[in-house]
Image (cartoon, rainbow, N blue to C red; front, top):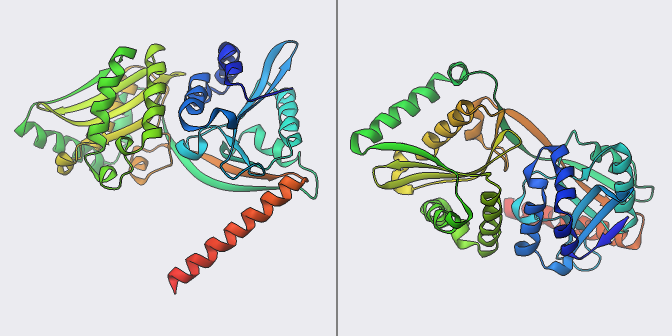
Length: 354
């Protein structure tokens, strides 16, 4: 077992790390994603990488960071508190997972492992690894939606509601009466990223996210993360930028990855001035069709499941959050603090309802 705060350890073992991530077929578990989170969203001294090596080979790992709650606060998956994208532990087989879970529990710190796949072997392993009076709490958390792709677009389109398909075609015709309408899918190079990302942020900030100060333009750490990560993705040939144009106006844009034979939607935004034409809906329709036409196996919406995504007849991926309190002083303090915060939230809600 190796526990390190040195992010250089991961940089030197990118290939070995990515070999484990390939077993999970999830680009958000790969080295570039983790390195980008540590470089932009965390202090390097808060990084805690737990790695298991067997016969000199990396066989399991957990990229953790210390929370902002001090020395007794929980360890969390890197980037999760800000990005809230699906995560997991990395392991090549059940034996490696067992060694990793044992190492996690031996840290003696509370663990807050959010958005683990409900079907991940790690969930049951962790729940069974903490002896009394320690405690593991499991809570279902936000699901994510994904469209399985099998067969031709035309057959899939027939399974969609006629209201959706007719609305998209009607909106496209309405937009075309005023301006030429076109959609393009770009594969940017690293040199293209700054300009294209700036265009995307301007579109995203034009609407409610801009007014609520929740856009990338208004959140410097997130902006730094995506600038770094998208440059890496472009260098790997995975980055895609879909753009819907109404004449010379960029009406909507989507940032995505193509990895493991799937389309992964990272961000989508639209120009608020075009809102009556639902450009985000039109662009999603075109992107899903593009995924079919290019022979991919699926389209991953990522993030938290939204009602507008359900109109695509997607599969639902279930996730859980594990709160782990080991039988240590740190675990007891963490459990007491979390219980106090939970009680305080309930009191505040009751006051607001009264």
